[in-house]
Each structure stands twice: as structure tokens, then as C-alpha cells.
Image (cartoon, rainbow, N blue to C red; front, side, top):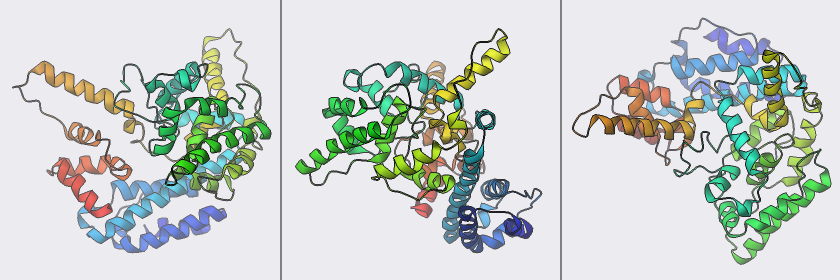
Length: 405
């Protein structure tokens, strides 16, 4: 373990990677004895491999029974730092990757990043894009704008509408969207459906979008300012080849990975000038539209897949952010589908007949609660392990709430 922890010293790290490494070491010191007890068999010689290997050891190999309550917080911080470190390293690839490497990486990430489900979302959104927001039904409007509800039935919405960027926390945005969708349509009308978006077109959109909120604030002084993240969701759904969809949590890591100055959730100018401007310097973004004219079936399938990626190439930077094997299973679509299947299975067997649920089933049912915080949802494997050891799901989740806040 000691060799693993010190190995990044010999690596050629970027400034962002070095800062993350030093930050990780601060949290390592609080759990160093626990880490030293972990057997290490793999010592990668690159920072991405190092970050993911140490993260795996922290999540699956460390003995949680030997951790003191005060050590859970630094462990959580170390895991978060390593996730960012892995994302930053993968995003370095985005800056230099030619188109074939860009596409191959997305293929490699397809399972853990739920690529098929994401593509189903984009296919659905593409059909909606011909219709103004004001004419969309409530559920379709929320699908376009990135807010999941229990009314998004899995048989109709066979994807999580919150892939790429959830807007469920942008309450004022959704309130105004319900009250005056025509104003948001007016803002989006400045963004053409084909061709490169120009600076003046983006500026016209951002001015119109921000005006909606500034007018509201005059009437409701406590209202929030125009949220950049929600605006990028609209932009990315309209033109996924041109825009990246942001959340507050993603801004920092994307800025670090793309080596641009960090901006906040109200800085519309920096989003365009720094983030979108930087992306437009990358080789893969300038790739011409893939040729889909092929008589060979295998080649045609590959070219059709490549075309789908190309049509949403800016948006697919999202797949260069770190993800583990639990991400795909956290999809709202998967949870609703499995919840319905479990309910139907129980109903068929009869109310008086008890069904023996596995630890995984018990945990997944508990995690379907929409009110659970993100850090709990990300601890599924740890919760399953504790349940298998005889603890109740509620006890484990309650303990995590008490520790992590």
C-alpha cells in the first residue's frame, strides 16, 4: 500500500492532477492504518489507473468494521477526490483524442455509462424537438428539461430523463417553465437546428433566458437568478452536437479536466467563451459527418452508431466523467421498472404468501425512495454487504445518515 500511495510522485502529472493527489493525501492520513491493512496486488503506473485502483480498494477492500465513526468522513472525502481525479485524467484524453479514439472510449464505457439508455433518451428528445415547449405534455416537457417524476412510466419512458443533467433542484426554473413556456420557446428560437451556433445566436438565447428570471425577481425578490445549468440542459437537448449539459457538481470537474478557469452557475459568458470555445478547438469536434452508405451489415451498424455519437458529440463529454459499475443501476428507469416487476411478482403469489427477498432486492427497494441523498444512493454495494452480514436496511441507511449528515 505504501508503494501505491507514493507512486504518483514518479508520474508526469498535470497541475490539476498534482493538486488532486496532494488533496487525496490529506484524507489518507486519517485512515492510513486502515489502508495499510489492505492487500495491494495492482500498482498502475498512470494517474488514472492509480485513482481508480485506490478508489476500488477504499470501497471494496477496506475493513469497515475497524473504522471509527470519525473516520467515515475522511474516507468519503477521499473517495470523492479520487472520483474527480479519475474524471480529470479521462478528460485529458478529450483534449488530444482524434475522432476514432473518442468513439472507441465511448464504446468501452457503454455498459457502465448506460449508453443504450442514454441513446434512447436522445432519440425520444429528437422526436420532441420539432414541437415547441408550450405544446408538449407535462411529462414530455419534464423529459426534455431533465426532471424525473413517478409519472414517467417505464413502459413509455424507457430511459432516465435525468441522464446528462438533472434539473430537479432548479425549482424556480420549473415554476417559470410551467407558467410561461412561450418565453423559453422564444429563447430557444435563437438556436438553429443545424449548422454551427454563432456567438451572436448564443448571446441572444442567454439574454432572453436571463430576462425571464430577471423579470421574475422584480416581482419576487427572493427568486433565484437565471441558472446556467438549467439553460445548458435546454441547449444540449436542442443541439447536443454543440453544447455540454452541466450541473453544479459537474462544473468544477469539467473545468479542471478541460484546463479552463472555473466559473459558477450564473456565468453564461464563461460557459460559451471558455468551455464551448475550448471544445471547438478539439480534433474530434471538427470531425465531418460519418458516412453511413455501406452495403456491409457490420460496417453499417458501426457507422450508424458512429453517426449517433457524432450528432451528440459535445454532449457525450459526459461519458468521460468517472463512473463505476453502480451508475447504470441508479437509473430512475431501472428502479421504476424493477419496482413494478417486484410488485407484480408479489401480487401474483398472493398476499398471504411471503416471498424471500435477497439482500439486493431489499436494498434496491429502500433506495427507490426519491428523498434519499445522492451519497446514500452511491453506497449500494456497501449497504448490500452490511445487510448480508445480518443488519437491517433501515439500520444501515440510518447509520450512514448519522455519519455523513
